[in-house]
Image 1 (cartoon, rainbow, N blue to C red):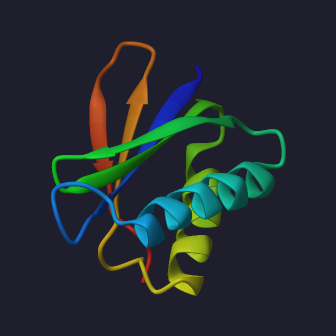
Image 2 (image 1 turned 90 degrees about the horizontal axis):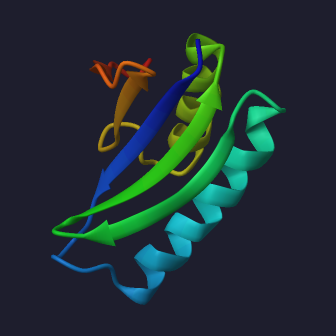
Length: 99
């Protein structure tokens, strides 16, 4: 069963700064490259104090979460980010990041 993962990172304000928007685009690219064919970045959005990156088609959730966490940790974002996993029934589970 395929899953989707939303990576949510708080913003400094309601709307992203130019630097935060550039970071979101950088993360989208890094996540897409790290997925190695196990899912794909569907896009992202920002507003209401948070930026989101949407990943779809994930079959190996634990492996993908580990890869995402490495990227977040490299950028000092691991403690602030939240990952939300949904399956095709639209049930959503929060995933705790590895420390």
